[in-house]
Image 1 (cartoon, rainbow, N blue to C red):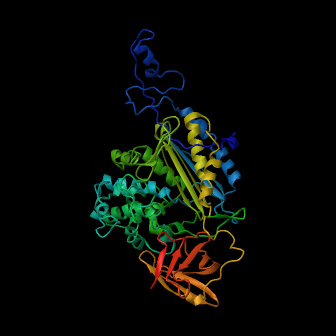
Image 2: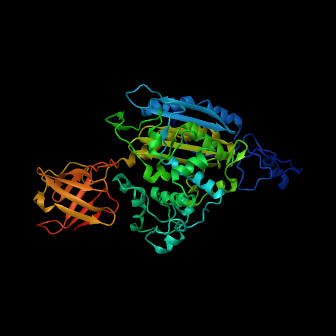
Length: 539
């Protein structure tokens, strides 16, 4: 039963049903020893035929296994909904070029009667990266760009911290997170209201890790690659992908525009969990990082996309994308999870996609996405079985979509679920919600007093945030920052340490703002813990 099923697992199968006739051989001879595998071998072994050594596995996947896994998707979805309490989810499965399953669970918004169905449009968060890579593959097919083009060919004013890397870094580098940019570089600026150009113009402020041998999951890094392609094509990113990908792939409600998402009558609202109940408290406009996280669509749209990818870039009889170009992105470009013991498997990233080898030796293509203020998504494809599954939810990440997609691919590959994936992924996501700030706990029993509030008042600045003002009003301090002059109060914690809740779209937990300088008199410096380049000086 699937309640136990949520021992779930992520995987992609790569097997072949090709075969070849074998020659004879005396028992014990080399030919006799090899013959069983060549002919298909014992029950469950995949025939090798003329495949090269890296193209086959010794575990077969049959259509019957896919059908058996498919029969359990309803129960898997219901079990995940019951165990997590999330408001809504939609699931779709494709196999052999057909959508063989599409269903909604739960509601689009808590407190309203509208239910989720296969046409409900969700914000898909980082699943956008895989879709974006396919959009770029179409541009490469059309010879608008090449994966190996330096981004400065199209964005001549763009810079990174190292001038040499600036000139070398390619579209492919940015789409595989191997430029050396640290993970999440610039994400905080987006939350404070900085637009795409403003964020990209500040990426040079981040010290780089070693080029092409360092993996750093960077939303605005990938957005840089997308901007280069859009500039080469002569149209905005959202229009480019709508014209060159969504239309030919028949992804009828998909979009990279937040306003387009809001215009969809059948759309899911994002939710966060508060005191054990999910609530629709926030909105998330991800347009600034659209190539990395700003797409929206239904499971029907994502099913159309998976069908095209599994078909090598074809939609029906039409070859939309060169299969060789598409395959480049579905192969390892950088190690993103290096094995730490001799008998473990490393994990890889292609262009906008995780590329992994499963426990049965089959290849799997996958990605997860999340807005911590209310969305979680995942897909997984097993090219050997010509099967893919996608799950979209309207709740903050607790491992729900990953549990569904991984359990399904386990069942396809082995007929069993390898572990309780809902617990596994839930525990992994829970660590991301742990607040390690010094001000997360209660203040000291006898806190050191603050200075006179006027000593903190002033303008502080750095190249990353620009000017940040601290003002005093009504016996309290207030901080204002960003191009939209977002403002929030400061609460005294201990000495020169204050706490605050960041304004804007960050919705970060409570964090520290610490002032510095001489022990008395006006402060000369400020450190904003929630900011990636946190140190500012008084002007």
